[in-house]
Amino acid sequence: MNDRTETAALLLPGIALLALAFALPILHMLVLAVAGPSGFTLEYLAKVLGDGFYLGVLWRTVRLSLVITALCALIGFPLAYIMARGGPRLRLALLVMVVLPLMTSVVVRTFGWMVLLTRSGLVPQTLRDLGLVNRSFSLMQTETAIVLGLTQVLLPFMVLSILGVLTRIDGRLEEAARTMGASFGRTLTAVVLPLSLPGLVAGSLLCFTLSASSFVTPNLLGGSRLHVLASSIYGAVTQTLDWNFAAAQAVVLFAGVLLVLVPYVRPTGPRHG
Image 1: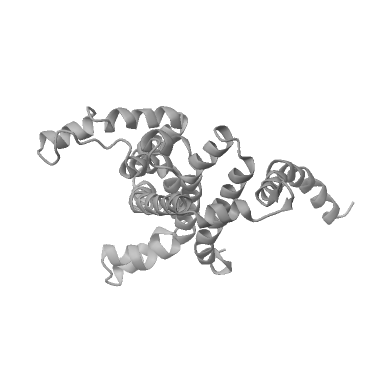
Image 2: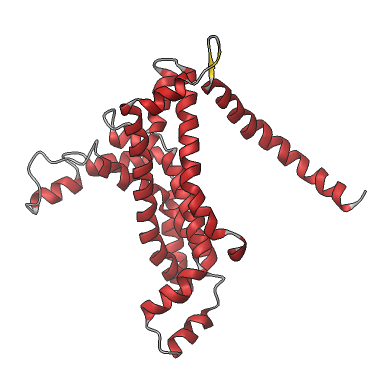
């Protein structure tokens, strides 16, 4: 048995699993999206793309996902840098703080945000005590609540992705830049940030895709008034039982995510491995 045969034999179980668990369901979803009572139809896709309500839901999903991804990057990069350059004890403490929430259910964490953001919760009450908002102020069922909840849920993915790259960057490169007269900020932007770009892109991909497809947190924090595509798909499946329309929305979400991800993938081409 040659090397190619051995490689194929090792890859075959994984390829078969991916085909059964990923490729076939997506293919079936694509078929449902264009399958009408009398055969092929674009009626369901046209309904999604031609109705202002569903276009608004699509735009809200993409917009919130981009905002959440940007916030995760702005918070995650400094945190990952401190973890990578700090001492062993500091790194361990921060790593525990980052990883520990992953061991708690997303539902539990979202309910925690509901307690904090409701009208009588800690955050609105503090803002009222400071005189910054009126007495009826509440963050529940707002886009701000969705952004806060999902940023906290997805931040560990960004931090760990960047940390894995930063720990492999030789610290002597930063020392050389500082020796040549570069300031700390200039060293970060000219040396550290370009070298950490693959980790930043990987974390952004994870945060954006998970945010765009998230259902529990937007549904609990945003309520029934603020729909995202995941909740709209769920409603089409469980309430109206319109599987074809749900599949059409899923196809639009899938295509929209791919269109947004292409610019992110290009920086991680052959030049960055």
